[in-house]
Image (cartoon, rainbow, N blue to C red):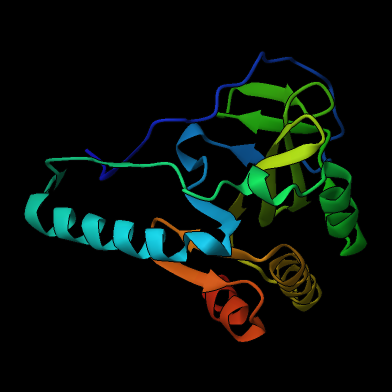
Amino acid sequence: MGLFSFRNFFKPKKAITPGFAPDEYVPIFWEDDYCQIEMVPFQNKTFIQKQAEQINELAGKSKTQYGFMETFERGPMPFKTISKKIRVNYLEDTLTGFQFLKARYIRYNKNEILECEKENTKAFGFTNFTIFFDIENEFVKNIWISTGLISSVTQYDLIVAALCTLGKNCELILIDWNSLSFFDLADKVQVNKYLWNLWK
Protein backbone atom coordinates (compact mmCIF):
# COMPACT_ATOMS: atom_id res chain seq x y z
CA MET A 1 0.00 0.00 0.00
CA GLY A 2 1.27 3.47 -0.82
CA LEU A 3 1.41 6.41 1.55
CA PHE A 4 -0.53 9.02 -0.39
CA SER A 5 -4.15 9.49 -1.29
CA PHE A 6 -5.50 12.51 -3.14
CA ARG A 7 -9.23 13.12 -3.23
CA ASN A 8 -9.63 15.26 -6.31
CA PHE A 9 -7.77 13.14 -8.82
CA PHE A 10 -8.12 13.73 -12.54
CA LYS A 11 -10.93 12.09 -14.47
CA PRO A 12 -10.92 12.35 -18.26
CA LYS A 13 -14.14 13.13 -20.08
CA LYS A 14 -13.55 10.51 -22.71
CA ALA A 15 -10.89 8.64 -24.63
CA ILE A 16 -10.24 8.50 -28.37
CA THR A 17 -8.15 6.38 -30.71
CA PRO A 18 -6.45 8.74 -33.18
CA GLY A 19 -3.67 8.18 -35.61
CA PHE A 20 -0.50 10.19 -35.10
CA ALA A 21 3.04 10.22 -36.41
CA PRO A 22 5.45 7.73 -34.78
CA ASP A 23 7.81 10.55 -33.75
CA GLU A 24 5.05 12.86 -32.50
CA TYR A 25 5.36 14.24 -28.96
CA VAL A 26 2.69 12.33 -27.02
CA PRO A 27 3.33 12.54 -23.25
CA ILE A 28 2.15 9.86 -20.85
CA PHE A 29 0.02 10.71 -17.84
CA TRP A 30 -0.82 8.21 -15.10
CA GLU A 31 -3.70 8.98 -12.76
CA ASP A 32 -1.41 8.49 -9.72
CA ASP A 33 0.86 11.27 -11.05
CA TYR A 34 -1.86 13.92 -10.85
CA CYS A 35 -0.41 16.81 -8.79
CA GLN A 36 2.31 14.60 -7.26
CA ILE A 37 4.87 17.13 -8.47
CA GLU A 38 2.91 20.35 -8.63
CA MET A 39 3.44 24.05 -9.09
CA VAL A 40 1.36 26.10 -6.67
CA PRO A 41 1.14 29.66 -5.31
CA PHE A 42 3.96 30.66 -2.96
CA GLN A 43 1.40 31.46 -0.24
CA ASN A 44 0.97 27.70 0.34
CA LYS A 45 4.50 27.33 1.72
CA THR A 46 3.49 27.08 5.41
CA PHE A 47 0.69 24.62 4.61
CA ILE A 48 3.08 22.45 2.58
CA GLN A 49 5.64 22.39 5.41
CA LYS A 50 2.95 21.29 7.87
CA GLN A 51 1.65 18.58 5.53
CA ALA A 52 5.19 17.30 4.96
CA GLU A 53 5.76 17.04 8.72
CA GLN A 54 2.50 15.11 9.16
CA ILE A 55 3.36 12.76 6.30
CA ASN A 56 6.83 12.10 7.73
CA GLU A 57 5.34 11.37 11.13
CA LEU A 58 2.76 8.95 9.70
CA ALA A 59 5.37 7.28 7.50
CA GLY A 60 7.58 6.64 10.51
CA LYS A 61 4.72 5.01 12.41
CA SER A 62 3.17 2.93 9.64
CA LYS A 63 6.08 1.81 7.46
CA THR A 64 6.70 -1.92 7.16
CA GLN A 65 8.92 -4.04 4.94
CA TYR A 66 5.93 -4.40 2.59
CA GLY A 67 4.98 -0.75 2.34
CA PHE A 68 2.76 1.43 4.52
CA MET A 69 -0.10 0.30 6.76
CA GLU A 70 -1.90 3.65 6.47
CA THR A 71 -2.43 6.32 3.85
CA PHE A 72 -2.25 10.08 4.22
CA GLU A 73 -4.99 12.01 2.47
CA ARG A 74 -3.61 15.33 1.33
CA GLY A 75 -5.96 18.23 1.74
CA PRO A 76 -6.53 20.93 -0.88
CA MET A 77 -4.18 23.89 -1.00
CA PRO A 78 -5.53 26.90 0.92
CA PHE A 79 -4.41 29.16 -1.96
CA LYS A 80 -5.57 27.52 -5.16
CA THR A 81 -3.62 27.97 -8.37
CA ILE A 82 -6.69 29.29 -10.15
CA SER A 83 -6.75 32.19 -7.67
CA LYS A 84 -3.60 33.52 -9.41
CA LYS A 85 -5.73 34.06 -12.54
CA ILE A 86 -3.03 32.73 -14.84
CA ARG A 87 -4.53 32.91 -18.31
CA VAL A 88 -4.24 29.82 -20.49
CA ASN A 89 -2.88 31.80 -23.44
CA TYR A 90 -0.19 33.35 -21.21
CA LEU A 91 1.02 29.95 -20.00
CA GLU A 92 0.94 28.45 -23.47
CA ASP A 93 2.79 31.41 -25.01
CA THR A 94 5.40 31.33 -22.24
CA LEU A 95 6.10 27.63 -22.67
CA THR A 96 6.23 27.71 -26.47
CA GLY A 97 8.53 30.74 -26.15
CA PHE A 98 11.00 28.39 -24.46
CA GLN A 99 10.58 25.84 -27.26
CA PHE A 100 8.29 23.51 -25.29
CA LEU A 101 6.34 21.35 -27.71
CA LYS A 102 2.55 21.53 -27.57
CA ALA A 103 0.99 18.09 -27.33
CA ARG A 104 -2.05 17.30 -29.46
CA TYR A 105 -2.64 14.08 -27.58
CA ILE A 106 -1.90 12.60 -24.14
CA ARG A 107 -1.57 8.90 -23.37
CA TYR A 108 -3.67 8.46 -20.25
CA ASN A 109 -3.04 5.37 -18.09
CA LYS A 110 -1.22 3.83 -21.06
CA ASN A 111 -4.24 2.51 -22.96
CA GLU A 112 -6.33 5.66 -23.45
CA ILE A 113 -5.62 8.64 -25.68
CA LEU A 114 -6.92 12.11 -24.80
CA GLU A 115 -7.28 14.84 -27.41
CA CYS A 116 -5.97 18.06 -25.85
CA GLU A 117 -8.07 20.41 -27.96
CA LYS A 118 -11.27 18.80 -26.67
CA GLU A 119 -10.21 18.15 -23.07
CA ASN A 120 -9.48 20.49 -20.16
CA THR A 121 -6.01 18.97 -19.73
CA LYS A 122 -3.08 20.30 -21.76
CA ALA A 123 0.57 19.28 -22.02
CA PHE A 124 3.74 21.07 -23.13
CA GLY A 125 7.32 19.90 -22.95
CA PHE A 126 9.84 17.41 -24.23
CA THR A 127 9.98 13.62 -24.24
CA ASN A 128 11.72 13.69 -20.84
CA PHE A 129 9.97 16.64 -19.15
CA THR A 130 6.32 17.62 -19.44
CA ILE A 131 4.28 20.37 -17.83
CA PHE A 132 0.62 19.37 -17.60
CA PHE A 133 -2.17 21.72 -16.62
CA ASP A 134 -5.92 21.68 -16.49
CA ILE A 135 -8.09 24.67 -17.14
CA GLU A 136 -11.35 26.26 -16.07
CA ASN A 137 -12.68 28.68 -18.66
CA GLU A 138 -9.72 30.88 -19.65
CA PHE A 139 -7.72 30.29 -16.45
CA VAL A 140 -5.22 27.64 -15.35
CA LYS A 141 -6.65 25.47 -12.56
CA ASN A 142 -3.73 23.17 -11.62
CA ILE A 143 -0.17 22.68 -12.89
CA TRP A 144 1.89 19.53 -12.42
CA ILE A 145 4.90 17.98 -14.08
CA SER A 146 6.25 14.62 -15.16
CA THR A 147 9.99 14.15 -15.30
CA GLY A 148 12.60 11.86 -16.78
CA LEU A 149 16.35 12.03 -17.24
CA ILE A 150 17.38 15.20 -19.06
CA SER A 151 20.29 14.50 -21.37
CA SER A 152 20.40 17.68 -23.47
CA VAL A 153 22.13 20.84 -22.20
CA THR A 154 19.87 22.93 -24.44
CA GLN A 155 16.70 21.38 -23.04
CA TYR A 156 17.97 21.69 -19.48
CA ASP A 157 18.63 25.42 -19.95
CA LEU A 158 15.19 25.94 -21.54
CA ILE A 159 13.44 24.13 -18.67
CA VAL A 160 15.32 26.18 -16.07
CA ALA A 161 14.47 29.42 -17.86
CA ALA A 162 10.79 28.49 -18.23
CA LEU A 163 10.39 27.46 -14.58
CA CYS A 164 12.16 30.60 -13.33
CA THR A 165 10.01 32.81 -15.53
CA LEU A 166 6.80 31.23 -14.23
CA GLY A 167 8.15 31.35 -10.68
CA LYS A 168 8.89 35.06 -10.87
CA ASN A 169 5.90 36.21 -12.89
CA CYS A 170 3.28 34.01 -11.21
CA GLU A 171 4.88 33.59 -7.74
CA LEU A 172 4.92 29.79 -7.87
CA ILE A 173 6.77 27.14 -5.92
CA LEU A 174 7.25 23.48 -6.82
CA ILE A 175 6.36 20.77 -4.33
CA ASP A 176 7.50 17.21 -4.99
CA TRP A 177 5.28 15.06 -2.76
CA ASN A 178 7.34 11.98 -3.61
CA SER A 179 10.38 13.38 -1.80
CA LEU A 180 8.51 15.92 0.39
CA SER A 181 10.74 18.69 -0.93
CA PHE A 182 9.76 22.08 -2.26
CA PHE A 183 11.57 24.76 -4.24
CA ASP A 184 11.02 28.45 -4.90
CA LEU A 185 10.77 28.65 -8.69
CA ALA A 186 11.73 32.33 -8.63
CA ASP A 187 15.18 31.29 -7.34
CA LYS A 188 17.39 29.88 -10.10
CA VAL A 189 19.66 28.20 -7.54
CA GLN A 190 16.71 26.23 -6.15
CA VAL A 191 15.44 25.34 -9.63
CA ASN A 192 18.88 23.98 -10.53
CA LYS A 193 19.00 22.08 -7.25
CA TYR A 194 15.77 20.29 -8.14
CA LEU A 195 16.61 19.63 -11.78
CA TRP A 196 20.17 18.51 -11.09
CA ASN A 197 18.84 15.13 -9.93
CA LEU A 198 17.27 14.70 -13.37
CA TRP A 199 20.49 15.46 -15.21
CA LYS A 200 21.97 12.48 -17.00
